[in-house]
Length: 215
Image (cartoon, rainbow, N blue to C red):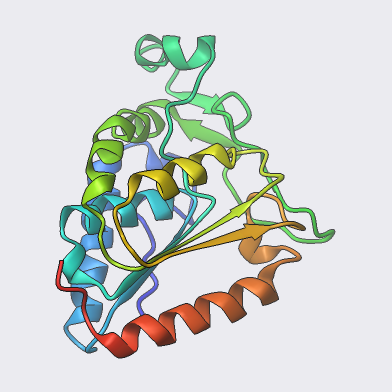
């Protein structure tokens, strides 16, 4: 197993201010390389933006993994006046509240759970992700390896239309759709965790036994 911590994440929002999408992508690529060096088959999994990064890397080279799992993953352009103004506002507002960035903090149905997310989002860092969505969507038809797409029907941060767009775009012949009926955005801390563990484990065991996808 290789658990990647993206630069600027998991510490303080100030640490994210100097990082951009390409930094996060490079760290995920390094994590995939480290895991591939010590195992015969790799199954890449990402939640939310982590799934976006996985889709980006694997759609560029499907042969690097045996399969992909993405959970509540954004790929569609955001809408609204703030999104349109974001390229200009980032030069005058270095930080924006998470809610203004379209993110719901602690988007978890289960009481007592805390995702420990930042309350502020560095504008330039966040916009660096948004600018990549069109390119990543163009790449998705290249993704031919097995894929499991899980999504919460009641997601307040990433609408399930994003997952439907992924399902329509990939050209894999081995596609598993997993709707999550009881969870919000951070499904891995929510009521559907046991279901996710069961289905993802079964998927990973099946595709890993076949080895890396030929691409």
